Length: 188
Image (spheres, rainbow, N blue to C red):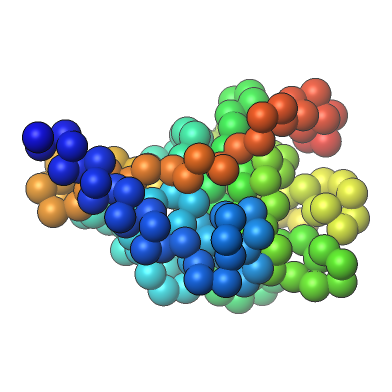
């Protein structure tokens, strides 16, 4: 019964976080924060760059990518509010695919969801503190390097486990046949 209750809470949490403007997670058009919340099940609010601090004491955090984890970009001159994306595939130690919203322009506008986008770790210590991201509108890996805080995982910290349901990633987080070869070519 306890497991069933947790599953129900996770499902209700997912359903209530899917942005009202989208019938499918991939039809979403809007900001990255509500999208990441719906795609990951991690219940954090506020500007993207604030997620890292807010996760402290609530969710486990770390420097290793895992499917369903939210990667938190720091606030910078290019990302005034930061950015959040959800890891959809781990390709290699330094290459992942993410599903996110409000990054590339599509049909001349920002905000659209993008599935299985290449993201590469370019940090000197191989610790995911600096990344480059694929741009659909440019059809290539961007030249900018973005600072990253790290990854927020769906499982709660031990102290918070009693009050937070485990986050469940959305089923649309990844596609059926992501282009691993393309992701590696993009990265290198």
